[in-house]
Image (cartoon, rainbow, N blue to C red):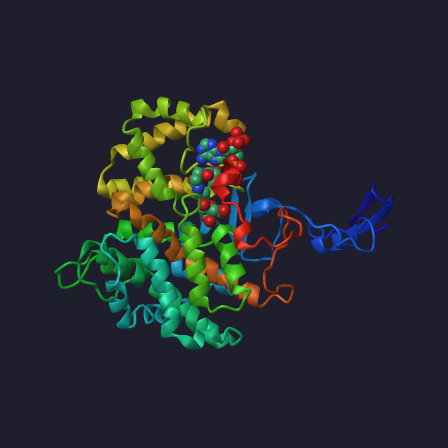
Amino acid sequence: MAHDSIVITDNRTNQTYTLPVKQGTIRAMDLRQIKTGPDDFGLMTYDPAFMNTASCRSSVTFIDGERGILRYRGYPIEVLAEHCTFLEVAYLLLFGELPTESELKNWVHEITHHTMLHETTKKFMEGFRHEAHPMAMLVSTIAALSTVYPQAREIHDAENRLLQIKRLIGKMPSIAAMSYRHSLGFPYVYPDNDLTYTENFMNMLWKMVEPKYVANPVLARALDILFILHADHEQNCSANVMRSVGSSQADPYLSTAAAAAALSGPLHGGANEEVLKMLDEIGSKENVPAYVKKVKEGHGKLMGFGHRVYKNYDPRAKIIKWTAEQVFEVTGRNRRLDIALELERIALEDEYFIQRKLYPNVDFYSGIIYQAMGFRPEMFTVLFAIPRTAGWLAQWQELLNDSDQKIARPRQIYTGHDVREFVPMTKRASMEVNAG
Ligand code: SDX
């Protein structure tokens, strides 16, 4: 009997089955042969929220949650954050190797020359109310780009795919900045090709009447590091959506819009905005113990704490904490950082959080930094979506090149009615009466 296999005995039939084990998994389809009789559909797995299901094979990102390890294409996140720019890391995620100097120069040139948006986008953006959430504006506008580039539907053409990928990476900061300026009623700022990716983003956000925007280099580098840390995270909720929508062969704009919609949820990318609300609700260091007590009694969660995979400190949080110190050197400390540090200190000593392996995640400090840099809380998830677009597109490309993949369509356990007689209108009792 092969060592890489398991034997299952079905006590319902006394049949035994040998299933091969590959890369720590069994193929779910191998369970379908386990039946109680010829009419039996066969066994399936039941795994709500995919807690223990591998949906794909991927070589993009590796996470070891127990040991707090995160690597993009084999390179530790700490090394990339220290030595690379975000566009260099985006290249690594998409092409699998770090670029040479000339490859990087060409890549930066290409992305820089795809930052402009079609002028109709301004009219589209004008349709939003000023108080519209920037994340909703971003999601809608990414989808709208599908109307500007209909050839994006040619998803089997590798060259065409690469052109759309460059457009999406180049235009995300422009759309994000437009949604921010729209919410403030400020005129839009066009890209400045003399600036780096993050400097240009700051330019499109914050340039007012000065002839040329000059970005603070410490803040521009901090943003670059934050973009690197947020670039990908294997099969998280939004990456799963990118793959699921992409598996129907939707174009990359509509797939990316769907992924960004998933990221907007407060349990995923929206957590950094919730962290700031939580810190403001706590109000002072002195109030932290009372707040922690409330959470332990089951009233709410510590936003920015916990993770589905990391049952150790999120390696990104450590780097973000260091980056926060660099930013506060420029912007000055604020009380939110002091409250956050006290919250972290108490939570890391408290058995409730230790037992549940709840540590600060990537969102815990990012919101404080963004706020200190001058971003409004509703922009935080937008700042997450910009770099994560590179990760989503790397996952999307991998999906399209994976011969194992086809349109995503999970099964279910049906819990509804068995077949029943139709009820004519005159015989129907209203639900209220039934509920009565
Ligand atoms: C991101 O997947 C990714 O990679 C995501 C991400 C990425 O880069 O894409 O890393 C980005 O989304 C980070 C997570 C941001 N979200 C938050 O910070 C929101 C607060 N965190 C939680 O909602 C929660 O920790 C999750 C959603 C992140 C993870 O939830 P799990 O793994 O499904 O854990 P769970 O909900 O089953 O909780 C296990 C226990 C429960 O207690 P018991 O029922 O066992 O008593 O831990 C408790 C939970 O109540 N718990 C928390 C908690 N998170 C979990 N208690 C207090 N505060 C928290 N934050």
